[in-house]
Image (cartoon, rainbow, N blue to C red):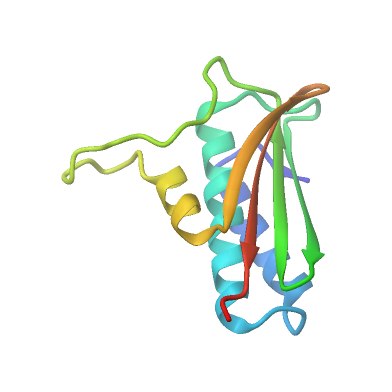
Length: 123
């Protein structure tokens, strides 16, 4: 669990890096940390918190990769890739996730919604 606050993204990045160092190739670990931070940041900006004012972050190792799941209290609008003006200062979070992930998606569940991303080693 991380706080439903802007600092939650940094906490998620540090935790996933600490937990998966040595378990993933460095390049994949860096991408996983970036994806976790983006998903938590999006949850903070666009969704309600879970009870306790938190966001849940889970990950599991896959054969050749990792799956990251970020669960929040839900948002009025489903997560989607946006086309943004090159000069825009925000709006690229899911584009970053899509670029780094093998695949990603979202599910409505229990108390809210979960956005997940699967990252795989190349080669």
